[in-house]
Image 1 (spheres, one colour):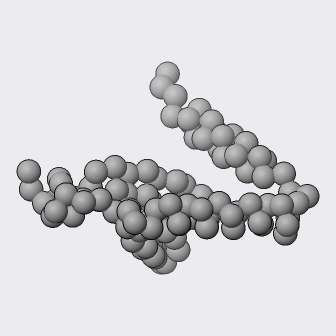
Image 2 (cartoon, rainbow, N blue to C red):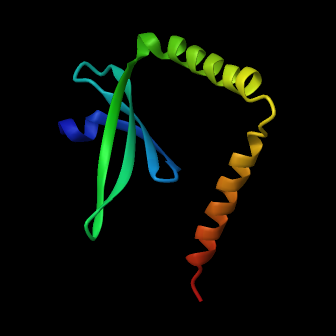
Length: 108
């Protein structure tokens, strides 16, 4: 198995408007694993687009601390800073957008 095949183990893409987030599990040469989180933002340029990317590496020894801090921070925003916002509306909007896109791809 060459290095490229061994390196990427799992990938999850999250589309969010002009941004796309990639969560990729990768392997080291020593068969250890780490996570890369990439934010890709699309910007118009000329007749097309350019993509600005920001990447973060998260190692297994930090997984639990990272998840805990992220959950606490999101919960703080939801309950303390924006308690009147119905965050479920964003999930519904995303499902509607996916349904709209899927309906455009139907074959006749």
